[in-house]
Structure formats: structure tokens, C-alpha cells
Length: 419
Image (cartoon, rainbow, N blue to C red; front, side, top):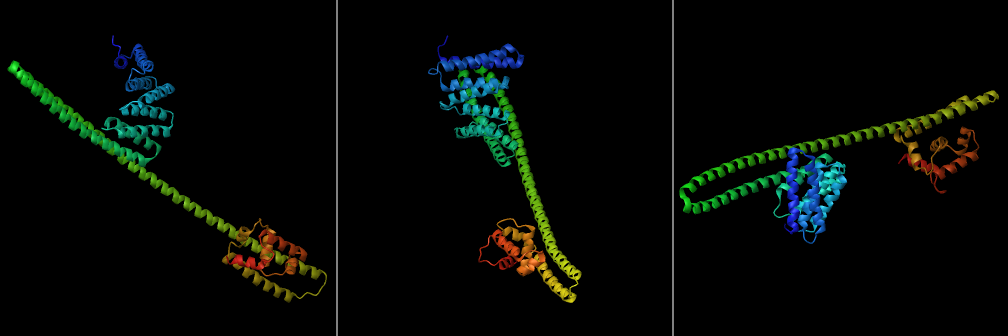
């Protein structure tokens, strides 16, 4: 029995493959158990004889075990991740293990997708892609699978730009693989031809007639195999190329549709915002009109009340003089009302905006009377309050508006109308 630990580990791995083939055909539970047990033996051997078994052999044994868990026991995610990370750690210490590292990242990405952790899934695939892209020469079969998985994953996440990028890379790598396989097939057939030609020359020395017959049959068989292989390779390439182009076209269409939807949503939001601002402006204007009208009505009520008192006291009343004064007041008030409503519709709103404290309805009335140029005594008579109360209110107004003692309240309010 061999004492080479590398050979023994490889033998365990090969035996696991044999059990896998038989299990896939016969579905025997004992074969499935043997697959796991033999793979565990290979891993245990690598852990026990680390100094005698190469890092690559140890990494492959652990990667195989993780792959079997993923294939036959996909629910054991914790065990799969643990075994895969052990394989990853073993592969990192060896040279030329790019495909093993990429396979480990591929398994971790698959588990992350099952756990709906798309960010981690993308990160693992990007690590695998970076490793494979630095490998010289590039192993196209592996990098094609990784770039295609990245395109699919980005598409699911709605990142169509990156999905389109990796889909283009997949198409490019498929083309490179096809060209490489074509060149390899030609070289292989040529090498086989040269080998058989030499063999034919040797055989001719021994048995010319029999060798010629056998070699003709062999050449014919090789030619047929080569043609069949090339035919299927050509069909496979065109199928993958067609699929990649269709997928690329769909990604472009999806991206265009998403951009259009975003543009429509932005336009709708802008329209709604403009309508809302217009409605608020109209509402504020109506409030200002109501305030101005209330001031005039209140003044009329006060005049009527005073007139009533004078009539009840039998005092002489100059009706014409009162009406004349009221007409003058109405004209002045209508002029101010026009300025407030038409020239500066946001007059009361601007007052509130410039105030350090919130202004009450009474404060706004005082501002309107002051804007009319009414003296302290006139305002006091109009509101049936003491002149002292009016002066105190003016003082509080200046405080609320944040004005200094030297600032004239009337001039300040007039300046707001011009703002």
C-alpha cells in the first residue's frame, strides 16, 4: 500500500466521484452516505498530515466536500459555508489555485443568494471574477460562468448598467473561447495526424498491408469524429452567442423603460408641487382679502355705533360731514386694500415672515391701520381703547418684528409693501 499521502487523498476524492456516479444512477442511500464519508476521509487526511499533503490537494478535498453538501444537502447552509471557507483558506496558501478560489467564492455567493443577501452574493462573485481575470492564460469556462452569474444577479437587483456590462463580457469571453477551441482542435487534429503518420511509417516496416488498412480506417474515424465535434461545437457556440445577444437587447430595453418611468415620475411630482404652491398662494390671498374687509367692516360698525349714541343723546349731528369723512376714509381704505390685494397680495404673509414672533389677528389689524397712516388717537377711537393701549401695542409690535427703538414702524411696514 502506498504511503504517499497526496496519492491517498486523491484516491479518496476519485472514490467519492465513483460513488457519485453510481448514486446518480441507482439512488442508493448507502452510496450517498459513502460519498460524504469518503470525502470527509480526504479532508481529515489533509488536516492530519498538513506537512505531507500539498495545499492544492487539501483545498480540492475540502471544496469537493462542500460541493457534495451543496448538491445533496442544500439545507445545511452553515456546514456548507464552514467547509467552503476552510477550502478557501487552504487554497490561499498555494500557487495556481485560481479556479479553486473562484469555485469557493461561487459557492459562498450561491448561499448568500439563498439567504437573500444580494450585496454579499455580488461581492463574492466580484472576488471570483477578479481572481480569474488575472489568471494567465484565462480559464474561459470558469470566467464565463462567473460573468454570466454577475449579469443575472445585477439584473435581479435592477442595476441594468452593470448587468449590461457583464453580459457584454460574457459574450466576448464566449467568442474568445470559441476561437481558442477552434485553434486547439486544429492543433490537436494536426498532432494526432503527425503521430499516426509516424506510427504508420513504423508499422509499414513490419506489416505494410495490414497497417495500411487499419490506418485508413483510423484516419476515417478521426476525421468523422473531428467533423462531428466541430459541428456540435459550432452549434453550441452560436446558441450561446444568440442567447447572449437576446439577453443584452432585453437589458437595454429594460433600462430604457426604467429611465422613462423615472422621468415621468419626476414630471408628475413637479406638476403636483406647482399646483400645491398655487393653491396655497390663492388661499393666502383670500385670507388677506378677508382680513382687509374685516377691518373696513369693523370701522363702519364703530362709526354707526358712535352715530347711534349721538342720536340717542339728542346731540346735533352733522350727517353730511360724517358721510364726507367716511367717503374719504373708504377711498383711502380701498386704495390700501387694492395695494394689499393686487400689488402686494402676500402683505400679511410677508408681515408674519418678517416677525420674530407669531403675529395675532389683532396685531395684523394694527399693522393695517398703521399702513393707512392713522394716528394713535384715531386707532384708539376706532377700537374703543385707550391711546396708551395703542402705544403699548405698537411697542409690542416693534418687539415682535425685531425692530430697534430708532426704527419707524410706519416706514418699516411701508417698506414691506415694496419688497
